Length: 366
Ligand code: PLP
Ligand code: COI
Image (cartoon, rainbow, N blue to C red):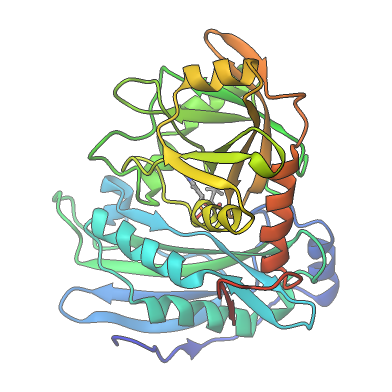
């Protein structure tokens, strides 16, 4: 198997009833409910990818010596399928997710899943779990979670020879329970997420494990999210727990957008990349550069920075309202969602939901 896979399909014998599914779709939350099926593809060194299957969603069996449980080779992706006004289902920039999945695999010395197989796995799952895609016209979508981990049993430290790729799907509403209300952030100087030369640019499970203690610290400080700074100087802003950051300077048609440059230790977000293009389309100047916590604080206080927002597949665009660090705290403008933030949010979600023209060709019908 090298490209288009032949998927064997095993239908679930106990899918959720229409009534149960309707109840879930009425208030899906984020990542709490899963569809009736999943995709599984195995990899063996020397043989390649094999045994592509659509299976009933359910438990998997692993040898206790499976290398992922000891040495952590595990990567994932996150993207959404959106129901369009005409009823069909489309995904947003699925090729970009396939490419980033392959880049993450290379960094973790794992085999690359061919892009076409990644896309086919999504088409197959949507085909069988179509009814799980939330209705058009709202904020909800079907969140797709492709992931891969080493399955070979053994305790020698080396790249494994056997892996499994799985794709699961979860109807999803807003990532933050309060919706598009501004979040508060804690600037982490004690802990770092990723260092130069490390795994920060990969969607690697260990990056998220490394973030949890700092996230707990943020919560103890009364903040919703942690903001990561660079590992060396602990000065330059990198990103948030599962989102990239944008800073809006000025207002109206003269507004400028700044986002931290891809340092090698932050995740190259697909939403970030898309917003750079959409902001430029709207006539805003856009800049990818280093931005320090001092610049953030002083230019918020002087009124030069007017808005800050986080962006990502799960979080879409979420305004940042308040910033706290060991040195004190400040609010961004009046702490409410800004005009540029909400205009970009409308454009992005309009493209994803089929109500705005897809001028960049980002949507793929599944
Ligand atoms: N940064 C991190 C650490 C993430 O986990 C995510 C989410 O995927 C992002 C940024 C945003 O990436 P994307 O826009 O591709 O979802
Ligand atoms: C996403 O936005 O897809 C993420 O992966 C963020 C988070 C849920 C880990």
